[in-house]
Structure formats: C-alpha cells, structure tokens
Amino acid sequence: MLVSVILTLILISIFNTSNEVHSLNILGVFPYQGKSHFYVFEPYLKELARRGHNLTVISYFPQKEPLKNYHDISLAGKSIIFEGIVPFQKQSLLTNMLTSLGVSYVAIDNCNIMMDDEEVQDLWKRKMKFDVAVVEQFNGDCALGLAHILNTPVVGLTSHLLMPYHYDRYGISYNPSYIPFLLLDGSTKSTLMQRLSHTISHIYMKLIYQYLTQRYEYKIISKYVDNIPSLEELGRNIKFLLLYNNMMLTGSNILPANVIEVGGYHVSKPQPLRDDLLKFIEESEHGVIYVSFGSMLRTATMPKDKMQAILDALAELPQRVVWKWEAKSLPGKPKNIFISKWLPQNDLLAHPNVVAFYSHCGMLGTTEALYHGVPLVGMPMFADQFRNAAAMEESGFGVTVKLENLTKDNLLEKFKMVLDPKFRENVKLLSKAWHDRPKSAMDTAIHWTEFAAKYPTLTFRSPAADVPLYQYLCLDIIFILSTIPITIIYIVVVLYKTYFKSKSKQKSNEKKDKNM
Image (cartoon, rainbow, N blue to C red; front, side):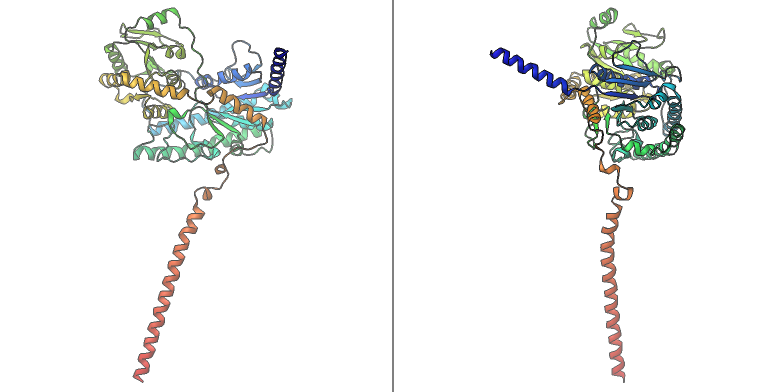
C-alpha cells in the first residue's frame, strides 16, 4: 500500500513537472558569415532544440544533417564565408580604423542579403509567431528590425566581449582608465598612449556604427516595412544579453542585471582522438604542446623569419608538438611536430598530456584552454584577440608574445614560464574556479532565453540606458554644486564691497564736516 502511494506521488510529480515545460517557437538570426562566431552559437541552438523547443534559424551555416525541431533558412552561397582571410601582420590604430569600416560595410551587405531572402520575407508575410528571437550582437542591428516586424522579444548573443557601440544601449559605462579597448593592445593597466588610442577608437567606432551602419540598415529595412523605431531604440529594448565571458578571464565587471555572463557553453564533452594522433600524444614522455592560430588567420602568410623563430624554439623543447597547419607540408619541420589541416581542438586540449597551447587567443580556443586547464602562450593578431590575451595574462592563465617581438629566445622563455610546474598548478586552480558555478553556462543561457519568452512584457534594462547624457554625467548636479559656492562667494564679495564703499563714503562725509 505504501509503495503504491509513493509511486502515485512520483507520477503526479512527473506529470506536474512536464506540464511546466512549454515548447517555445524560437527565431535565431545570425546574418554574419564568420564561421568562428557560429561555432559558439551552434551548440546552444542545438541544445534548445534538444530540450523540445522549435527553432527557425537564419544563418550561413545550415545543418549538414536534418535535426529534430531545427529548421534552417539558409543564406549559404550568397556571400563568402570568412575563413583564412586575415594575414599575419602587425595591427595598429590605422588598420583598426580601416577594419572597422570594412566590418560596417559587411553588416550593410548582410542586411541586404537577409531582407531580400524570400524565406525570410515569408516569415512576416505569413505572420509567423515566435515566442523569442535570439540574435547575434556583433556588427549590425538588422536582426532587431526583423524581430520588430515579427513583434518578437529579443535575447542578444555574443561570441566575444562587448563591442564599443553596445555599452550605451545596456547602460554600461566605458572608462578607458581601467577598461581596455576590445580591438587594440592593452590591459586594465594600460599606458597613457594606449588609453588615448582606446578612447579615440571607441568614439570612432561608435560614430561609424551610428552614422553609417545603423543609418543604412534602417533604410534597407524601411523598404519592406514602414514606421519602425530607430535601431538604437530597438537595441535598448533587448531583454537580455548573453555575454560570452566569465569573470575568471576578465575579472570583475560593472554589468547590469540583464547582461549575463555565459562563457563556456560551446565546450562539449571530449570525444576519443583518432588513433595516429592519440598514439603521438600518449607516447610523448614530456607531454605535448598544441599550436593553432584559428580559422581566420592565414598561417602561410607569416613572415619567414618569424616562422623560423617558432620552428627553432619548438625544436629545442623536449615536448612533442601538434600543429594545425593548413598547407600540405611545413618547410623545415622538426621531427617532434605532428601537422594536420584540421584537428579536434576541444578533444585535444582535454587530453592530460597536452601541457601548453600556443594560440592567437581567439575566444573559442581561449575558453577551451581555460575549461581544460591548459596554460596559454598567446600571440594576438587582430580583433578581440588583443583583449582576450591581455585578460588571460592578467588572470594568470598564460603569457603573451607579440609578433613584432617574436624571436627564438623570446618564445623559448615564454614556453618555459607556462611549462613550469607551479605555473601549471595555478592554471589548474583557476580552471577549477572557472567550473565552480551555481549553474552550467549552457543551463544559464537556456534559462534566461526561456525567461525572456515567459515574461515578454517586462523590461530588465538598466535605468542608465535611458537617462540623457547630461544627467548620466551628472552635469546638472555639478552645475548646481559649483553654482552654490560661486553664488555665495559673489554675494560675500558684493556685500564686502558695499560695506567698504559705505564706510569710505561715511569717512569722506565726516572729513567734509570737519573742514566746514
């Protein structure tokens, strides 16, 4: 009897729990063709589908095999995929400004392509209903216009830290005295010249975004629908931003309640390595160094003297090396190096014999290294890699070497630092802290996505996003506080002058009286 009662209660509990889980219709909008960006978002989208939600995903990266609850609106073939297009060269303030212009024009082109797509247009023509839209926050806001047309609340996603033009819409203060600029070299303790460059670049990118990107995207969207709010206003109405970061990488941040750190959700459970790679790694007596510069950099464009410096340094280390090398052969390759055009990076970094990672400090690789506790030697080349590298070094996860300063001896010194047992032990401790969260990164991301759909009428943005600039900077208060003492001083001076003038006049009159 007792057993049947318990079973009945369990069944009732399961039934009630299942009733609380609602299948959502979710629109995913990813109009940027950067493969490394979509690598971050894809596991999250698949997990939403796995949990029973129905997804419609606009992107350049459709699923190769049909996935339950996952419907692609493919933009593939309508623009080149960004992979292996960046040369190895020193970045500067000027190249950063030119890159910013290029990124803006890419956003405008992406908006044209997406809004002109028949399947995309069919969404509003058929008046499709979605509970929430998950959209990338990177180089444009065209996705916000689409979500507005469909009357859908928005959750923003990033595969990186905040872009300069996103601070204001979330009510976050950008202060170059301690906040580095995402796309340039420098840390929280930047030099005066770095802070000056950060300030100029921050203002420049905001102006480009406001007067070029958003203006032209708005014109494109207006061809299909009338009377939409400004894209910046739509940006301020985003319910939540799922920021691909964790405080163990960048330290403490002043973030509002609707900006939630979810760094690490793309890292999956490691799979077994292929036989030849596994054999090479496990037979290494002193461990293995993994070398990869990601999907965007063209390794073949590295200057010959720098390539030789890397080869000479690696040849002197007792560790074996696994290198993601895109060409058929590596000229001058030492015997201790294993090369391959493609490598299962996450699975490889998870192997206990991998003792260091020589990387460009892209967010995916940096995240995977922190996840698995592998120290980094970072050589940032462009975009957010500089900010990631600076944060990684400040946090104690690794060290950096600049391309322009790269020599055999310099690189050897950096490797010896991260291979030191005490350094590696500290990295393992930091990795343990990285994992120590109330909820996993994936569960956190899913929770707030479902939360936004569940409460679409509620607003969670910071009040700082709505106040006028003079009030945000407290100029009115400063004016009042400075006016009061100035007024008092003025009154005192006037009274003082009046008193002495009166006294002087009185003495003058007295003198006249005596003379008479």
